[in-house]
Amino acid sequence: MALASILGAAVLLGSSGGASPPTFFEARSTANDSVATVSGGGWVLLTAFGIDVRSTATIPLSNIVNTTGSGCTPTAVGGGALARTITVPAYSGSFGAGRAPLWTFLYRQSASGPFLLANVFAGASPTLANLTGAGCATNLSKVAAMPSTLVDSPPVASTAWSGSGVNASSFAAGDPAIDTLLMVATGSVKVSGYSFSGWAFEYAPCAPFGSAPLTNETAFVMLFGPHGTLQTSATVQTGCPSV
Image (cartoon, rainbow, N blue to C red; front, side, top):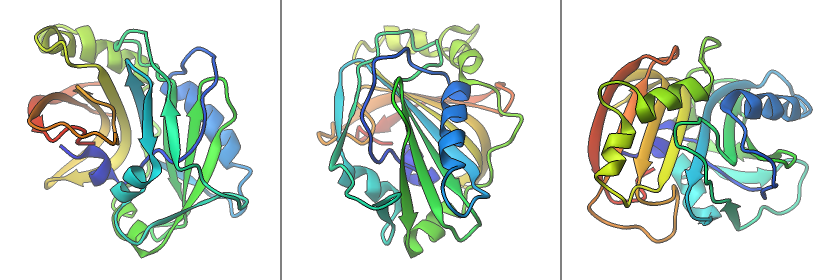
């Protein structure tokens, strides 16, 4: 299930700090303050990613940019060079906490762009990158603005991990290879003909956007509405990393 490819967003650059990992709301506030300083204004939030990995992961920039589609070029806000790789710090907390050492936010000014990415690492200033080109408009214009009613990550993460009925901790107990959580918050987007808006949680045995893909791995995916109500869950076979 190629969540990131479908939603068209990615991690682009940055380095980590040593502070406690933020929740979605905490990281969003930091990102919004930073994005507000970028010329043009009127930035609308589309999608956010929170990444938890049990072991430090180094992600090639080329793998990440490719998820936005061809013809989409990243440039550092204010000029300068982009890092070729980023390092996602290891996360030792519970997958039910709704916190992540790295959150990435995708914004746009209009349906045709321009588009902007903001990375928020715990304890560090946000880093920003522009995304320009026809590929950006083709893929990223399919995502609607994130709903203002979207709940914060902790209550959804808690339900996903240990809620009554189907939950991710039961799945992970039977598959000790599960060591990564990707949390995706998004505005309305069509996924295989299905319109979805809210939270998607994917538990997998590898880091998102990694450089050493595995094959025939099993991931567990849970979809929640904007208010945190479980809509569906499924195990999926993936050429990990699938996101």
